[in-house]
Length: 142
Image 1 (cartoon, rainbow, N blue to C red):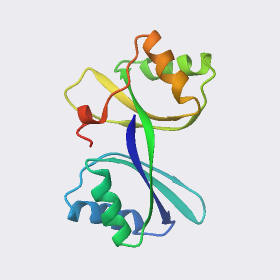
Image 2 (spheres, rainbow, N blue to C red):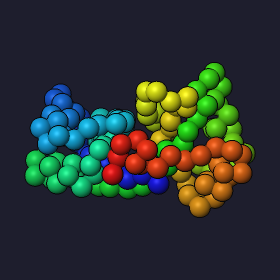
Image 3 (cartoon, rainbow, N blue to C red):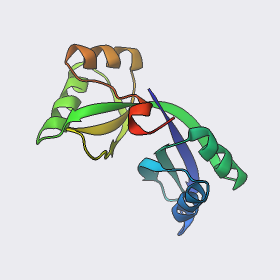
Image 4 (spheres, one colour):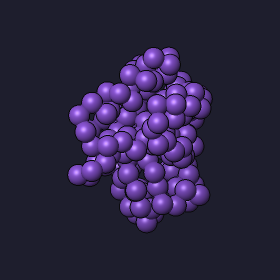
């Protein structure tokens, strides 16, 4: 499991830039990022190098921030690799609440970040099929 930041932001020009600038000014590296939006607000989900430092910095800028846990799964970096992992989850009746990718140079795997419905079962299914979850330290996260 890896800790993820979720930042609730108004759906207005410059809001994402403001969040990322705050992180930059506090020496925090963004390793993965996803944005989901509606007409009025968005949720900026991020894996960052220092979750607590990021949470504090953003809270000081009056951002609404939450922290939750997600799985980072090593996916074979070849055509069909993601489709295979998604089929494994579907066959195990594990629902995906959301997912996004994480790029890490110099490895033979790609990485997908998942928020899944059945956390305990997920790790068992992945292990049984030879897939692995990736610890945050391996990705430069703490």
